[in-house]
Image (cartoon, rainbow, N blue to C red; front, side):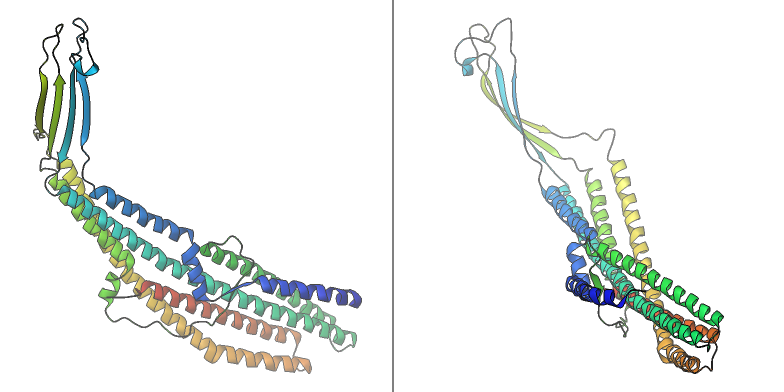
Length: 423
């Protein structure tokens, strides 16, 4: 037992420490936590980088082929020599040539369309990452709020048990309580203290889980505040429109359209591209080498001959990719419908559990606990009976808290499966 003088000396220090801790505490409401996560979450930043990368791919796809410049010197005869005079008068055949590929069959437009659709899919992926982040932050936030209240309930129960031990020791000294009953109360107090320590550890884990989603390195100062949700999200009547408006379904639909453009691009590969070349040739003559032709201009046209291969592999691969994109779209729609149905069922069941605890279970167990404490204080109830009632009251509080946390997370999950602006 700490001496009274030492407790008095430590009281100002403890007060200053508590005030400093409260000053550094980062108290968040749910909206603030979601805002911080959208600014600092690593996964969301990676999704945004993916959108920038897709935009770069659009720029590359929309670019026309660059011309090719060729500088060439040939017909250098070591035996005859290159003649006298300036560099331009040397008897060598010099050529300057420019070749330009002319794409046909709408390849550039189809390539650009496919890249634009993939960019749309990347934007939808970013929206879906943001949707899932809001859901995960809400779940972690309510876990933290529940952990805070669980720690408070456990600490109050431990304090009550310790007070009961002190009172029992006084009664034992006065001969009003058996030693075995005092020992039972002491054991129950130790169990309550263990529960409080477990609750404190769970609170620390909840802080760290939320800090990870918020992109923060330190979780010590995090604290959740704000009411528990008590209303259900508004129901959207048209489930088909609800599913198609979800960003993950929108991303799958964009990838289907990109695959269609890629298939058309593969088919357009059967349309021959033409390469046109223009050249200027300078080949002066000399006394030692009279074969020169002076200055001349040439034009060339190159056309591929599809004699052995006509893009069958590319076309088949693109058609298979389109089939896979359709399957992924159907899978995304099916998963979205299942998410909506599951979230609605969970939130309705959780709401019924919370109502039962608030309406029936908590009032009944609280009244039983108050009556038992009054009877025990007046010697009308045994130790084991009052311990059972206390445990039942603490268990009811913790179960009610768990039910409320489940309801809050179910509401957040339902809001996550519902699009923000359904069309």
